Length: 83
Image (cartoon, rainbow, N blue to C red; front, top):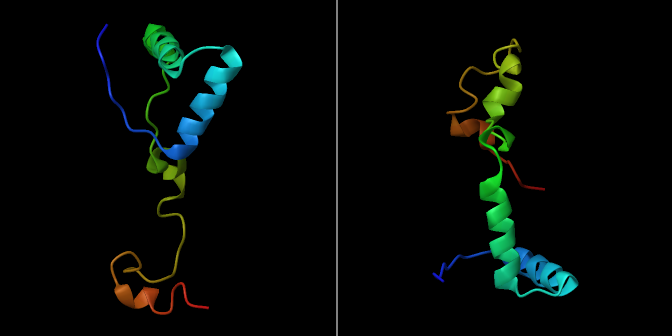
């Protein structure tokens, strides 16, 4: 069997450990089964990447007024985050 090393955040590590304990499996076996199930899915079952622009594209340019340089002028951030 081959070895694969991955890095996961601590919260996911905890969830993995809990799920492995519930299923009475090792973490490696649980990950192997999950990965096998994922790659066995038909291509049309995999959700394609959807960007924020794809989701809210109809809102782009729908507002009138406001500064035209909002995204590029640092002056608009003066005092941002200060209480």
